[in-house]
Image 1 (tube, rainbow, N blue to C red):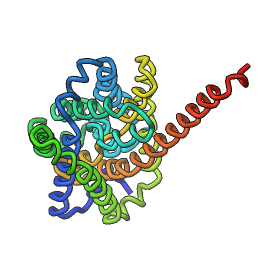
Image 2: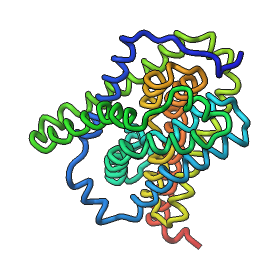
Image 3: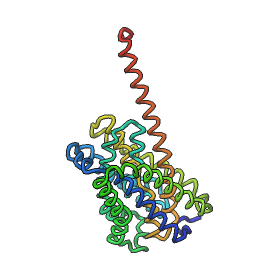
Image 4: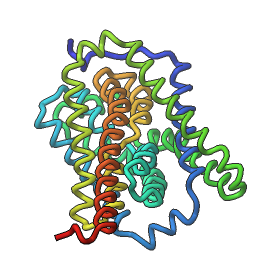
Amino acid sequence: MNVDDVVLNFAPGSMIALNVVLGLIMFGIALDTSVDDFKAVARAPRAMAIALVAQIVLLPAVTFGLTLLLQVQGSIALGMILVACCPPGNISQVLTYRARGNVALSVSMTAVANVIYIFVLPLSLAFWGGLHPTGREFLQEVSLNGWQMMAEILLIIGLPFAAGFLLRAKAPRLAARVQPYARWVSLIGLVGFIVAALVGNWAVFVAVLGIVLAVVFLHDAVALGLGYASALAGRLPSRDRKAVTFEVGIRNAGLGLGLVFTFFDGLGGMAVVAGWWGIWDIIAGLVVASLWAWRTRRREAAVSERAAHPEGVA
Protein backbone atom coordinates (compact mmCIF):
# COMPACT_ATOMS: atom_id res chain seq x y z
CA MET A 1 0.00 0.00 0.00
CA ASN A 2 1.25 3.47 -0.92
CA VAL A 3 0.44 5.43 2.22
CA ASP A 4 0.94 8.69 0.31
CA ASP A 5 -2.26 7.94 -1.64
CA VAL A 6 -4.36 7.02 1.41
CA VAL A 7 -6.84 9.38 3.04
CA LEU A 8 -8.25 8.41 6.43
CA ASN A 9 -11.98 8.56 7.05
CA PHE A 10 -13.31 10.69 9.86
CA ALA A 11 -16.75 12.11 10.58
CA PRO A 12 -16.99 15.92 10.75
CA GLY A 13 -18.52 15.63 14.23
CA SER A 14 -15.40 13.83 15.40
CA MET A 15 -13.27 16.78 14.37
CA ILE A 16 -15.40 19.10 16.47
CA ALA A 17 -14.91 16.74 19.41
CA LEU A 18 -11.14 16.72 18.83
CA ASN A 19 -10.99 20.51 18.82
CA VAL A 20 -12.97 20.60 22.06
CA VAL A 21 -10.56 18.12 23.65
CA LEU A 22 -7.52 20.10 22.49
CA GLY A 23 -9.07 23.30 23.80
CA LEU A 24 -9.73 21.59 27.13
CA ILE A 25 -6.09 20.49 27.29
CA MET A 26 -4.93 24.09 26.89
CA PHE A 27 -7.56 25.28 29.36
CA GLY A 28 -6.21 22.78 31.91
CA ILE A 29 -2.62 23.93 31.34
CA ALA A 30 -3.66 27.55 31.86
CA LEU A 31 -5.50 26.71 35.08
CA ASP A 32 -2.15 25.56 36.43
CA THR A 33 -0.35 28.68 35.18
CA SER A 34 0.11 32.03 36.89
CA VAL A 35 1.96 35.27 36.28
CA ASP A 36 4.67 33.93 38.60
CA ASP A 37 5.41 31.17 36.10
CA PHE A 38 6.31 33.74 33.48
CA LYS A 39 8.32 35.72 36.03
CA ALA A 40 10.25 32.54 36.80
CA VAL A 41 11.56 32.60 33.24
CA ALA A 42 13.26 35.93 33.93
CA ARG A 43 14.81 34.56 37.11
CA ALA A 44 16.11 31.37 35.46
CA PRO A 45 16.40 32.13 31.74
CA ARG A 46 19.07 29.54 30.92
CA ALA A 47 16.83 26.48 31.26
CA MET A 48 14.06 28.17 29.29
CA ALA A 49 16.45 29.26 26.53
CA ILE A 50 17.87 25.73 26.25
CA ALA A 51 14.41 24.16 26.07
CA LEU A 52 13.15 26.64 23.46
CA VAL A 53 16.21 26.27 21.21
CA ALA A 54 16.02 22.47 21.48
CA GLN A 55 12.31 22.44 20.61
CA ILE A 56 12.01 25.15 18.01
CA VAL A 57 15.35 24.83 16.21
CA LEU A 58 17.07 21.52 16.93
CA LEU A 59 14.14 19.07 17.04
CA PRO A 60 12.69 19.99 13.60
CA ALA A 61 16.21 20.08 12.09
CA VAL A 62 17.15 16.68 13.54
CA THR A 63 13.76 15.29 12.49
CA PHE A 64 14.33 16.53 8.95
CA GLY A 65 17.66 14.69 8.89
CA LEU A 66 16.03 11.56 10.32
CA THR A 67 13.42 11.49 7.54
CA LEU A 68 16.19 11.62 4.95
CA LEU A 69 18.20 8.94 6.74
CA LEU A 70 15.22 6.57 7.00
CA GLN A 71 14.06 7.39 3.44
CA VAL A 72 10.40 7.23 4.45
CA GLN A 73 7.54 8.10 2.12
CA GLY A 74 6.64 11.75 1.73
CA SER A 75 3.47 11.77 3.85
CA ILE A 76 5.20 9.93 6.70
CA ALA A 77 8.12 12.36 6.53
CA LEU A 78 5.74 15.33 6.64
CA GLY A 79 3.92 13.73 9.59
CA MET A 80 7.20 13.43 11.49
CA ILE A 81 8.05 17.06 10.71
CA LEU A 82 4.58 18.20 11.80
CA VAL A 83 4.89 16.41 15.15
CA ALA A 84 8.34 17.93 15.69
CA CYS A 85 6.88 21.38 14.99
CA CYS A 86 4.00 20.94 17.48
CA PRO A 87 4.09 22.54 20.96
CA PRO A 88 4.91 20.47 24.06
CA GLY A 89 2.16 18.34 25.56
CA ASN A 90 0.84 19.02 29.05
CA ILE A 91 1.59 15.45 30.14
CA SER A 92 5.22 16.59 30.30
CA GLN A 93 4.39 18.09 33.69
CA VAL A 94 2.93 14.79 34.94
CA LEU A 95 6.01 12.90 33.75
CA THR A 96 8.37 15.47 35.27
CA TYR A 97 6.57 15.07 38.59
CA ARG A 98 6.76 11.27 38.38
CA ALA A 99 10.49 11.45 37.57
CA ARG A 100 11.03 13.78 40.56
CA GLY A 101 12.04 16.64 38.32
CA ASN A 102 11.48 20.38 38.58
CA VAL A 103 7.70 20.62 38.10
CA ALA A 104 7.62 24.41 38.54
CA LEU A 105 10.10 24.77 35.68
CA SER A 106 8.08 22.34 33.57
CA VAL A 107 4.89 24.35 34.08
CA SER A 108 6.70 27.60 33.19
CA MET A 109 8.29 26.14 30.07
CA THR A 110 5.04 24.62 28.82
CA ALA A 111 3.13 27.86 29.39
CA VAL A 112 5.67 30.03 27.59
CA ALA A 113 6.27 27.55 24.76
CA ASN A 114 2.58 27.12 23.96
CA VAL A 115 2.16 30.86 23.54
CA ILE A 116 5.21 31.05 21.26
CA TYR A 117 4.11 28.05 19.19
CA ILE A 118 0.94 29.83 18.07
CA PHE A 119 3.23 31.77 15.76
CA VAL A 120 6.13 29.35 15.36
CA LEU A 121 4.29 26.18 14.32
CA PRO A 122 3.00 27.35 10.91
CA LEU A 123 6.34 28.96 10.03
CA SER A 124 8.38 25.94 11.12
CA LEU A 125 6.16 23.46 9.27
CA ALA A 126 6.24 25.56 6.09
CA PHE A 127 10.03 25.92 6.27
CA TRP A 128 11.07 22.33 7.01
CA GLY A 129 8.24 20.74 5.04
CA GLY A 130 9.02 22.98 2.09
CA LEU A 131 12.65 21.82 2.13
CA HIS A 132 11.80 18.11 2.11
CA PRO A 133 12.28 16.52 -1.32
CA THR A 134 9.13 14.37 -1.15
CA GLY A 135 7.10 16.00 1.63
CA ARG A 136 6.92 19.45 0.05
CA GLU A 137 4.61 18.23 -2.73
CA PHE A 138 1.85 17.77 -0.15
CA LEU A 139 2.34 21.32 1.11
CA GLN A 140 2.04 22.53 -2.47
CA GLU A 141 -1.10 20.45 -3.06
CA VAL A 142 -2.93 21.98 -0.10
CA SER A 143 -1.43 25.46 -0.67
CA LEU A 144 -0.74 25.74 3.05
CA ASN A 145 -1.79 29.15 4.30
CA GLY A 146 0.32 30.08 7.33
CA TRP A 147 -2.08 32.79 8.44
CA GLN A 148 -5.04 30.42 8.26
CA MET A 149 -3.18 27.80 10.28
CA MET A 150 -2.14 30.44 12.80
CA ALA A 151 -5.78 31.50 13.18
CA GLU A 152 -6.82 27.86 13.67
CA ILE A 153 -4.13 27.33 16.30
CA LEU A 154 -5.14 30.56 18.02
CA LEU A 155 -8.72 29.28 18.29
CA ILE A 156 -7.70 25.82 19.48
CA ILE A 157 -4.94 26.67 21.96
CA GLY A 158 -4.75 30.46 22.28
CA LEU A 159 -8.29 31.33 23.39
CA PRO A 160 -8.71 28.36 25.80
CA PHE A 161 -5.33 29.19 27.33
CA ALA A 162 -6.34 32.83 27.80
CA ALA A 163 -9.66 31.78 29.36
CA GLY A 164 -7.98 29.41 31.81
CA PHE A 165 -5.29 31.93 32.66
CA LEU A 166 -7.89 34.60 33.46
CA LEU A 167 -9.94 32.17 35.56
CA ARG A 168 -6.82 31.27 37.55
CA ALA A 169 -6.08 34.97 38.09
CA LYS A 170 -9.65 35.98 39.05
CA ALA A 171 -10.86 32.86 40.88
CA PRO A 172 -7.83 30.79 42.01
CA ARG A 173 -9.85 28.52 44.33
CA LEU A 174 -12.29 27.59 41.59
CA ALA A 175 -9.41 27.06 39.16
CA ALA A 176 -7.68 24.75 41.64
CA ARG A 177 -10.84 22.62 41.93
CA VAL A 178 -11.45 22.46 38.20
CA GLN A 179 -7.87 21.90 37.06
CA PRO A 180 -7.46 18.18 37.94
CA TYR A 181 -10.71 17.31 36.16
CA ALA A 182 -9.78 19.35 33.07
CA ARG A 183 -6.36 17.70 32.91
CA TRP A 184 -7.48 14.09 33.17
CA VAL A 185 -10.72 14.37 31.20
CA SER A 186 -8.85 16.00 28.33
CA LEU A 187 -6.08 13.39 28.45
CA ILE A 188 -8.54 10.50 28.46
CA GLY A 189 -10.53 12.18 25.69
CA LEU A 190 -7.44 12.63 23.55
CA VAL A 191 -6.27 9.03 23.98
CA GLY A 192 -9.82 7.85 23.24
CA PHE A 193 -9.94 9.95 20.10
CA ILE A 194 -6.61 8.63 18.84
CA VAL A 195 -7.60 5.02 19.55
CA ALA A 196 -10.91 5.56 17.74
CA ALA A 197 -9.04 7.04 14.77
CA LEU A 198 -6.74 4.04 14.55
CA VAL A 199 -9.53 1.49 15.01
CA GLY A 200 -11.75 3.24 12.46
CA ASN A 201 -8.96 3.07 9.90
CA TRP A 202 -7.47 -0.21 11.04
CA ALA A 203 -6.78 -1.60 7.57
CA VAL A 204 -4.58 1.39 6.75
CA PHE A 205 -2.81 1.21 10.10
CA VAL A 206 -2.07 -2.52 9.76
CA ALA A 207 -0.77 -2.01 6.22
CA VAL A 208 1.86 0.47 7.43
CA LEU A 209 2.25 -0.95 10.94
CA GLY A 210 5.89 -2.02 10.66
CA ILE A 211 7.29 1.22 9.28
CA VAL A 212 5.15 3.45 11.54
CA LEU A 213 6.11 1.58 14.72
CA ALA A 214 9.80 1.78 13.85
CA VAL A 215 9.67 5.42 12.75
CA VAL A 216 7.72 6.67 15.77
CA PHE A 217 9.87 4.63 18.17
CA LEU A 218 13.07 6.11 16.77
CA HIS A 219 11.67 9.61 16.44
CA ASP A 220 10.36 9.67 20.01
CA ALA A 221 13.64 8.30 21.37
CA VAL A 222 15.55 10.98 19.43
CA ALA A 223 13.28 13.72 20.82
CA LEU A 224 13.72 12.58 24.43
CA GLY A 225 17.46 12.09 23.92
CA LEU A 226 17.79 15.52 22.35
CA GLY A 227 16.06 17.11 25.33
CA TYR A 228 18.38 15.38 27.77
CA ALA A 229 21.51 16.08 25.71
CA SER A 230 20.61 19.76 25.42
CA ALA A 231 20.08 20.07 29.16
CA LEU A 232 23.30 18.18 29.85
CA ALA A 233 25.26 20.38 27.45
CA GLY A 234 23.77 23.41 29.18
CA ARG A 235 25.01 22.09 32.53
CA LEU A 236 21.58 22.19 34.12
CA PRO A 237 21.07 20.47 37.49
CA SER A 238 19.49 17.02 37.59
CA ARG A 239 15.92 18.10 38.36
CA ASP A 240 16.01 20.70 35.58
CA ARG A 241 17.40 18.13 33.12
CA LYS A 242 14.39 15.94 33.74
CA ALA A 243 12.01 18.82 33.07
CA VAL A 244 13.77 19.83 29.85
CA THR A 245 13.92 16.21 28.65
CA PHE A 246 10.15 15.83 28.80
CA GLU A 247 9.51 19.37 27.58
CA VAL A 248 11.38 18.58 24.36
CA GLY A 249 10.45 14.91 24.05
CA ILE A 250 6.70 15.18 24.67
CA ARG A 251 4.82 16.81 21.79
CA ASN A 252 1.15 17.72 21.41
CA ALA A 253 0.53 15.15 18.67
CA GLY A 254 -3.23 15.54 19.19
CA LEU A 255 -3.00 19.07 17.86
CA GLY A 256 -0.95 17.74 14.97
CA LEU A 257 -3.65 15.15 14.21
CA GLY A 258 -6.28 17.88 14.21
CA LEU A 259 -4.22 19.93 11.76
CA VAL A 260 -3.81 16.89 9.49
CA PHE A 261 -7.58 16.58 9.12
CA THR A 262 -8.12 20.34 8.89
CA PHE A 263 -5.45 21.20 6.33
CA PHE A 264 -4.40 17.90 4.73
CA ASP A 265 -7.75 16.09 4.44
CA GLY A 266 -6.65 13.21 6.67
CA LEU A 267 -3.55 12.33 4.62
CA GLY A 268 -2.73 8.75 5.56
CA GLY A 269 0.95 8.86 6.48
CA MET A 270 0.66 12.11 8.41
CA ALA A 271 -2.42 11.01 10.34
CA VAL A 272 -1.07 7.57 11.28
CA VAL A 273 2.24 9.01 12.46
CA ALA A 274 0.56 11.71 14.55
CA GLY A 275 -2.03 9.28 15.91
CA TRP A 276 0.44 6.59 16.94
CA TRP A 277 2.88 9.17 18.30
CA GLY A 278 0.14 10.43 20.64
CA ILE A 279 -0.14 6.96 22.17
CA TRP A 280 3.51 5.86 22.12
CA ASP A 281 4.71 9.20 23.48
CA ILE A 282 2.76 8.61 26.69
CA ILE A 283 3.97 5.01 27.01
CA ALA A 284 7.63 5.87 26.41
CA GLY A 285 7.42 8.90 28.69
CA LEU A 286 5.96 6.87 31.54
CA VAL A 287 8.69 4.24 31.17
CA VAL A 288 11.47 6.85 31.21
CA ALA A 289 9.91 8.75 34.12
CA SER A 290 9.40 5.56 36.16
CA LEU A 291 12.99 4.40 35.57
CA TRP A 292 14.25 7.87 36.49
CA ALA A 293 12.19 7.89 39.69
CA TRP A 294 13.42 4.39 40.61
CA ARG A 295 17.03 5.42 40.07
CA THR A 296 16.51 8.57 42.16
CA ARG A 297 14.97 6.56 45.01
CA ARG A 298 17.91 4.16 44.98
CA ARG A 299 20.40 7.02 45.05
CA GLU A 300 18.54 8.72 47.92
CA ALA A 301 18.38 5.42 49.83
CA ALA A 302 22.13 4.91 49.38
CA VAL A 303 22.85 8.42 50.65
CA SER A 304 20.61 7.86 53.67
CA GLU A 305 22.32 4.54 54.38
CA ARG A 306 25.78 6.12 54.30
CA ALA A 307 24.58 8.94 56.56
CA ALA A 308 23.11 6.45 59.05
CA HIS A 309 26.21 4.22 59.09
CA PRO A 310 29.24 6.45 58.44
CA GLU A 311 31.53 3.88 60.03
CA GLY A 312 30.81 1.56 57.11
CA VAL A 313 32.19 4.02 54.58
CA ALA A 314 35.83 3.39 53.66
